[in-house]
Length: 313
Image (cartoon, rainbow, N blue to C red; front, side, top):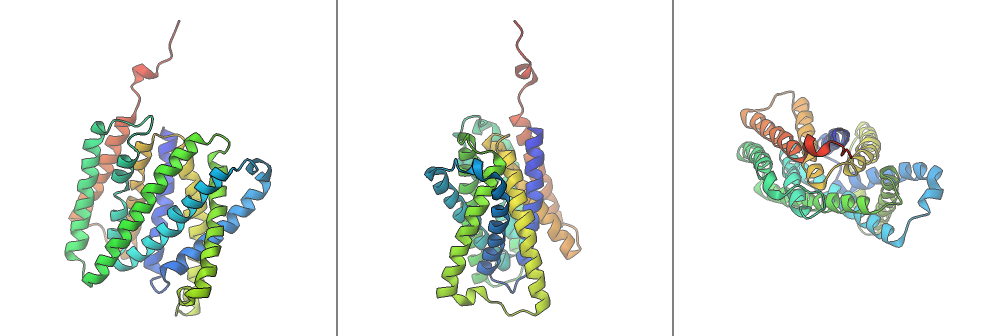
């Protein structure tokens, strides 16, 4: 379990970095950021798939259908909605709305085998929810901006939340029941499928919405765009996906759902560093409440030592 928690924390640190990209590149629209990132993911995954081509021949039609849905909903649509939310709300409120994932995943996956009864998670979830309320009070009560933009940002953030809730539960369930691929092979296959889906999206946009693939920016900003897209592809997609799949195979779904909150915490940390200011009182309270909820949840998932001892004849 400790190794699974470590993998989940590392994935959260990388995903938190990705959340800063729309803040750094506001002149590039969500469709362009998403399509380029995942085209790069597809190329990287294809290169990784070549040495294991023999093992990947075990791919079934059911596997391919699941991979396509994970690629479109959990990667492309999720990231487009997340970028749109961040560009309208800012990193902190958008990441913390998506940070409700521990609640939504636990509720969605509460009937899975090995899940801790929901009654034992009421306390941890209450702490996490209180932390989310604190940070949202801070950001929505005092942040300036157009109300229409905020409402659209809220809609996009909730859509991203729905996409990743579905992705996290379905990916975890399928990994556990699919015995012919390990977590690394599954990550590579998901990356290849995401690249193919992104290529189709780019082709569709080029035909019907070419303005979505354009941006008015100086060359220096385009260089930053390509560098950030590559970092998102290598670190925020491939490596983070591999780490998360490794965690999903080692942890019950309700615990892995709680640990997604690391993405929110790291995004907040990066945002504070970017603005060169520490958290306010409400932000500090939110961080303490969320970390407390995660640690409490981990305690609820531990196996008692008496049950862990081997039996003797």
